[in-house]
Image (cartoon, rainbow, N blue to C red):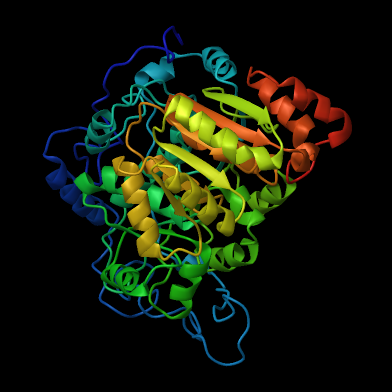
Length: 544
């Protein structure tokens, strides 16, 4: 039965792990019989033997129906891979030819690693449905697996469990509890959940298990797992998690994004990494120049898909996906479910699961206490300094609308003795990294930023006694409001958000009142009054 406490049902380890290891009836992922590095290496060899994959020589093309006898190095009949960057110009990605895939010529690969834990099997579908209802989880799709209640029930390998416990996690988040069985079954899936729900580990850990079941990379191979993200900050955040959980299994990763020198990124790609986390533009740049390729990608993740579409990346995403074999496993993650994301999901995913945590209506994390002050635009700065003098500064991010405003506010606060630094898109990458390191270390606990600079990077902060976001300038839409404040209440942590709301933002008054009310927050009387003349206040995509 799904029972009391924070999860449902009991615990208990599961020694069997992921079904027989990587070949020949071995000990299985998670059996814990050998030190992790040895087990991971042996597992790779066993799997390679079991699937009869030969070691691939360097260049060649897909030959002989396997990874051996030809390798990946050579291109795809008639014209090669990438096509160069010359001749005729065109937009970003114009040098890449769409590949005409012939599935009969592609080597097979493993993507189903899920063996249901006996405790999960023993639970009824009614118990599973009741648990989903209690966690506000909705599911769609054929043959949806039951959720798990503990990390052991997910049958994670020992090297993964060790890292999970080291990070202090007590139990899977709702999106992990339902998403892990879906991903480990090898099926495509779309996960819709708010910022801070634990989705990064929901796709990373199954991705690492996927990698350890594939043949070793050979010279000239691209990655096995590709994670696409809208901003370099989110990409770096994902890399940090990859570093934590991939080191013990000797999985290499790199992060490629614009605004940083190409040399280091190029070196990583040419040496070969199993995981690439990338922003679309920089990845296409490397694909066009032949630095890497996506012929080995069998596990694709689109993180914050709604943000990527909103930022205009759809053409680049479609070009990138055209370079990946169509029988890949694809996982898409989004905080919202507008028409544009639905259309892309239908184009990129096949026979997919959909798991939604919470309402599809725009909503804020209930772990965040929201304060909204209705003020005149000219009074915001004095109110800000009064607040800092009254409450002090303890790891606070202040969002402003423009780069110029970011610089001005940072200088003014520093002039009054507050330890403020600023970050925005016009700053050099090394300066941004230095400022973020100062912020994370606590040397500079007050970070002033534009919306696009440190959105996701805020998650890299160490465990904080207090998490706070200030919207000095209210964002231009309610989706950004929810995303901003979501940075201070991740993984069940409590957070606080203060927003200054002026007359020029009155069109969002109605929508903001609904967000506050749905989260059980206090609604200022002045904000309620603005509803009568401020308009509807739907999100960026309009009313849902």
